[in-house]
Image 1: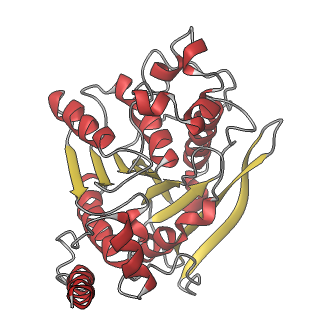
Image 2 (image 1 turned 45 degrees about the vertical axis):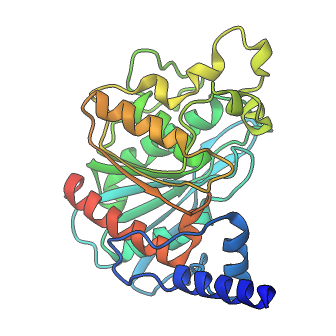
Length: 321
């Protein structure tokens, strides 16, 4: 009897979690634990997005454009925009995640296609991974990608004064460094791209990106030490601090929209909490959605993705239009 009651109660809980309100402005009900979320997925109650949608006939696409050649590999980007585009248009630049050591510029095709259909120029860049070159190589690469897009703005009808960067996880970290660090006097590129284009952007969207690499958890994580190139115990030049976006928060930083789940077991939600507090303290517009009961890569969930896109739409309308 107790077992039957438990199974019934669990079924009801999962059903309620899966069938939350259709109001996309409100965060979907999350899960009590990673375990209940996995059960919901296994039973079909947690629906995921179609991560690799077909490219609609209404969109122009330019894939695998080489924007930089490094000793390690050629770096490429993908571009999407409406075929009927007739004027300079805001650009959304996406930076994929993968613990700085894996991932693909096509990982965000769902967003690239959706926002191109909404009228934006969308782009996604590749970058060198930690096993290929240590920090600041990846940061320099995404900076070069942004500068390449600005240098070729006339070819793709990009409005260089209306640019947002969107990054997830490691890509969120690189996006924050690009937004907060590259325009201050402490940023010195050891391998410049030869471009004079400004790295200034007008808006930043951070999906569950690490903000402080000096916390006890971060400095002992192998992905972080691989990214930095040295262990924290032998870091005599403050590389961990210098690679932390939180270090560079200042009043002239772009408005920032952050999404982070409380069940995130890879990047603790405290990283987003601290970022929001730091941005607010210096007067930077910070919109923070702390999603209760959702994990890392929370926006793979269909309802969460719709929620995120709804708030991204409003955010871009405020700062790019």
